[in-house]
Image 1 (spheres, rainbow, N blue to C red):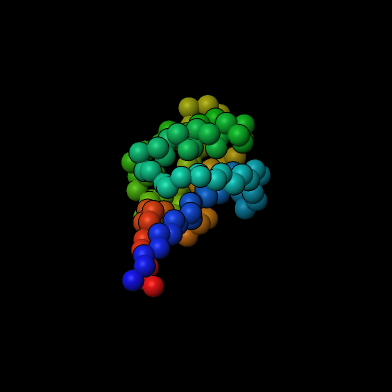
Image 2: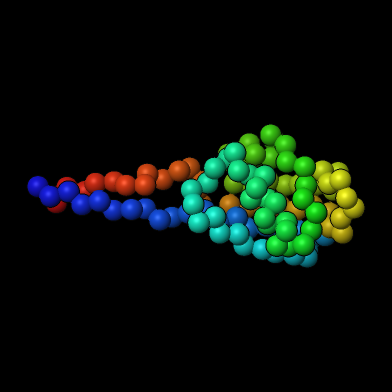
Amino acid sequence: MKQQELKAKVFPRIWAKTMLGDKITRSYMYDLGEPFDENNLFTYISEITRAMDIPTPIVLKSHAYNFVHFNVAKFLRREYVEEVDFDFFTIENSAGTIKPLPRYFCEDM
């Protein structure tokens, strides 16, 4: 029997948007290009907010928990040090899952 190695290249993408009332005022899609790492969530958000030209919010443990378990995190106006021109900022996992996929798996032929 011959074994063949296949590499899974499904990496999550984060959809970020600012909302004012019911309307999306800014939208940005961020490709990770690597498996999701919960410890780098602040880095991801910093890069996203820099690209969207908005202030970076305070990232709490509850935001990380909600993003990992429910695929969405919401940042309200009170979680910003600076004044913002939107009601809330949301990040959403658009790839379906952020659980790390196995990098390699073998198939028997």
